[in-house]
Length: 492
View 1 (cartoon, rainbow, N blue to C red):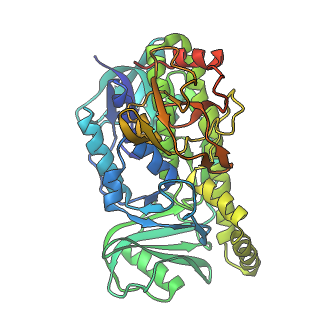
View 2: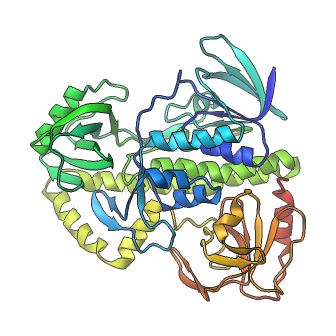
View 3: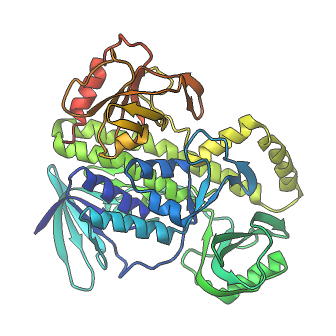
């Protein structure tokens, strides 16, 4: 029987990101997918600021930036939300098809030694105190592999979730959205979101030169998940609502979705975990789903690696994956349900949209919604009372003895970093992390959701880019709580 450290079910963005995280940390990984091969379907249409930051932390962003189309305006239920003044290096949405994202991530995974195994559905497993024995089907018959952990990144119909007996509770679909990636002979003069008419709304967004995503949403019908939708059906529905077909032709992908919202009752069953759509599905409003899954993976990866190196700390540390990520997904389900309600036809919703449109012109409201959609405002609980604690670390410019750098570049090895900005700040207590003495010329750091704060004198940064501890006092030593945390999370 083959053995490995972690088996990942699903070769989408979540699974590939997790595979890269684990390989950077030196773990052996097997990525299995039930499909016979990658479909090439474009699927999700972009990534937000926080996802760009976490990919940048691992040096995996440049190829995507070169292929994508930056747009500084996002939306909340098709009401424009300006992202341009967010405190990040990436104050925009990067419009890029999921197929290109997967290609880049799979290429990086291959460089790290990961090969995706296609036609490899997981059909069963059993676990014991030391590992998981996984049964794999496919056209070549049944085979088995043993791993320390199994992670289901295998989508909304997750086989891993069902085998684990984890409930997937929520609300049923009340509407249908249809989309097609096409070429247009009569393209619109500008891109638009959610123009409302009759019993629905329609959108047109250019994904790449000559290639558009058209969307039509209808609130007067519900298509069953998995029901067939032909290009002719899509064109008829789009034309009925929009009054034109824009000369659509040469479809590359046609699909449909609903506003069903479901959340896994738990993210862990012993040595089995769920991430991405296997843990949560929702109405695809604001393009939050792919981003949510990638950030699940970055949260879970270093914790699995640490648990494999330090069994004594495994359970407590691994439990924080659910306690940190489940509330984030719950908030996404909540805001996408709200966006569904704001998209319904009729004069009552029209009035509500007018009021919301006025409110969103207020900076406080715009920032609140924008930071929620982009996930720049996430705040995990920590034992530190500093305003940076629990929040993603700002990517400020630094100068070290080796020359100029920036904070996120320090996170390439996926290890904790003790960043010291004062000669008297605490030194590294163990050999478990990278200790960096640097200078920041900025007297204040801008923190989304908080505002400008005085530059700290020292901070302890988790491998996923969130601040575990920070201090403004150069005479403060690293508390024992965090010395113990470092010992528990050692991955090298």
